[in-house]
Image (cartoon, rainbow, N blue to C red; front, side, top):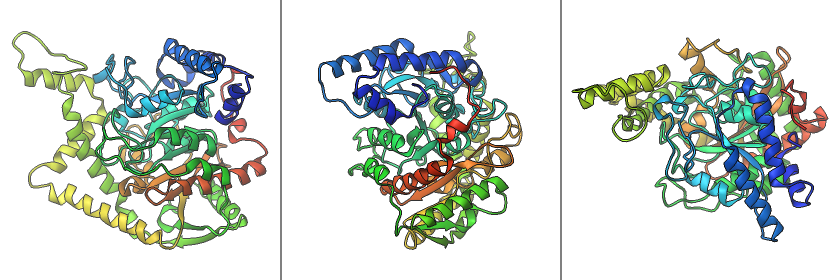
Length: 498
């Protein structure tokens, strides 16, 4: 049961083959069996999940009209506030904090009847690409427990890949949904900035952060995307426009006549051979389906990584100033006679991890008097040039494509002491966030060097998210026909489920 995709599970719920309670119990059993090794979850809310499932079963029995995903279990990244449930953003500074409210995303999930199993591990405040920066220890990739599942949404990706949940929610600031999706053989989508509410999403970089869905198939991901998206008056950056027809696009999957642009700067040198090979093969598949493949030039992408690592730390240095030991979260160093400044300093020293401190210092420096224009101001100018590069490219192509990540999953500890090497893993995903457009990663096969998943990235203009699903569904169907089985069936994934 747990090895089915969410669409199959929904059909079983609808025809009475199973119940939401049975489905939830099966996933809780899988979590109990394998999470000691995977460590995808920071908190499992078994009691709350079973109560939600029971409510869905009662509504279905009474004949109430339910959403397509009602009763489907879901893993929630620990960056989204959930009322009464521990929410830490992967940081010791928020250990034990239980929000008094739900984020808008959580409210939408509950309204749709999804069953939230618990909160998943993440890089602290979403700062990282491997989930090794969590204040509570790393998460391990179910394909190979010696390797990272990517990050910062590594816990959510690992949970779906290890059959602990059929769906998950992550957040993507510089690739933190798409990169772990690529490294664990999943579909992951960063919706258009502003398409999904950020109310209740613990902020890292407010102009870049965006919650989004993980699934095992393009259609599963589209169904979750549709639930999460929509205008929210509580979020000043929320787009007041209809949700794109992502589910219909995922069901059509026709790319005949579609122009697909290959970004010259996001392939070739620096990309693992097996990654490039699977990418090139996927292009051939799309061409065989009737798509027109064109090359596009985005020259300012060369500076995207540098611009991102000035803009994001600058915004984080402002956002994390609220963690001051005075209002909520950790408080330490409160000896008799200690000043507020001393308590604040001691608390931040104890509560923030090394990567968070590094980015706060970098951002504070970039915003300081005398350096603002030279660093932060210049980075914002590069951001404008990247937006213009995308605008020109989309006059030549309906969607743009690249490998999602330059390599497959790397070993735990391999890059943790080399921040620059870690940052380079986001080279293909960061431009999407800087421009505020949408992007998807879906499995393109396994690299021959290590038999690990490779991700294929699709990008579309703002509020044209349906194009991701249209192209993604076409490629997925063709590759599935070629492989003969879903990619996760090829993984040495931990057993323990039915």
